[in-house]
Image (tube, rainbow, N blue to C red):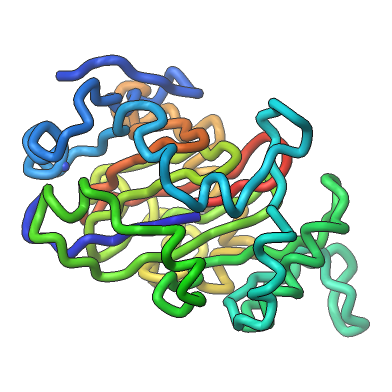
Length: 292
């Protein structure tokens, strides 16, 4: 996935919304995608907002990296002919699934983070079955480390350059075979989250509410973990289960009069602004490749 993090020079009534779960407040979808409207409605007030649907559909990567599995379909696969020439590029990968080690307990979850050639990920996605338990996820690959041609497919949106000072802290790519999952966390800078292929659901929480959720989970487990990074403890075992239940389970509806947080569903070409300090968790849904 493409995650643009913008340094806070301070960025953030067009009014139609979309939500998967009615118990979560719907993130406003802006009618006007101009930098001025975005700055006044979302960036300066520091509230989440979805840009007009398909606002980023002209990014070159949408068409060069991803192609429909079937003509005219909405399920996508990677464009292997285009991407394989860059297979020697080293990228960060995450391996999740059931542990096969002889020293592990039966059914114990596995999580490994490592760097490997891009070709390993491409070959896996080409052969993986939709119901496979062991999964590879290209997680938080820095655009600046990609070959020039691939970087050129992901130009900085005008919105980023014009709405604030235009300086960018980091730009990352996330690609996987749905379903995918990113646990509850917060980032130190505002984010512009752009969906390149497939569908994702994002749940967001104000800083104080997200902190309460995370601290509640840590207290329940007798731990003091950090949500500043995607650690192993958040991706497997007891903490993963408890944290996911707090954000995505039935009890996620009971706080704040049934409106505990915000939710948005993003499809190809959509973009979501996530204000600085807002907690969020992301799920890739549907079938095929999802990329942001």
